[in-house]
Length: 344
Ligand code: NCD
Ligand code: ZN
Ligand code: ZN
Image (tube, rainbow, N blue to C red; front, top):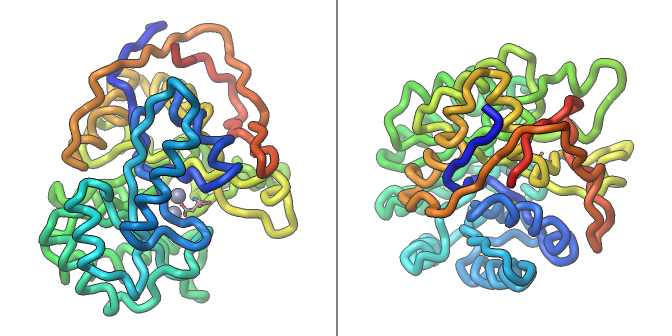
């Protein structure tokens, strides 16, 4: 196959940041994706409906003339979140999910949740109104090894929350382990799970053998190869619960090439080329559309995009090594292998 036409994809987990950084990175998502779930981990975080509305306006104002893109907004869950404000933001159509960051788990998560009892009322309200909870699923306990933090979170936090809040719809964000794949598969359709580009292409050896590669450092951290295999099996299965969330997470290059480098991979410019390459190698190109264009809208109860994109295979493409933004250059994800598929 050298050409593949599919419904236009969406990105169900995206960091656009704000200001000059946002202006620089937004076109790279809007070029290929119709919609994206916009992560709220700004500084300060997007907590209220009013803040989400203002952020959405800033995104639309930064969109280049002639480009169409629908930012699907989320609220950052804090222990002070007001359930009425959440319900109103959902009822107006502005907000499509609430995001749970365990305090201290990842980039800009300091305002996240430490005591889960304090968000019980909000979660119950969300279950009532059918508003999904997107979860960064890692515990932060210092005695839990970083490579085990996702699996432990499922047992200690996620499963108890779901049992305590029947009917709550949950997206396990950026899953990285066979444990998460197995947990998602064992649940009913109230659970969805997003998978990133880098976790389908790389394992921890790619990051750490022969030199440390800071542009492969993200959270949850890349795991051993057997987990990558389980994720690839999930993504290429066609199963409705698994869909693309790139977690494209731009950080200025100097903040990653640093003695204490930031977590996040900027994959937006190459996400679809990477996925086509990966699905083709897995013999599953016919399942790509389900993963990038069909399963996400079905979970969120939104229509599939009516326009299409065409991926074509040819000579290896040469993506830019970095994208210039007013907040400094941002290194573009390079999986270290040739990419033959381009959009258009
Ligand atoms: C994300 C970021 O930079 O905001 N980083 C990452 O490594 N994934 C935060 C997140 O999604 O956890
Ligand atoms: Zn996260
Ligand atoms: Zn993220």
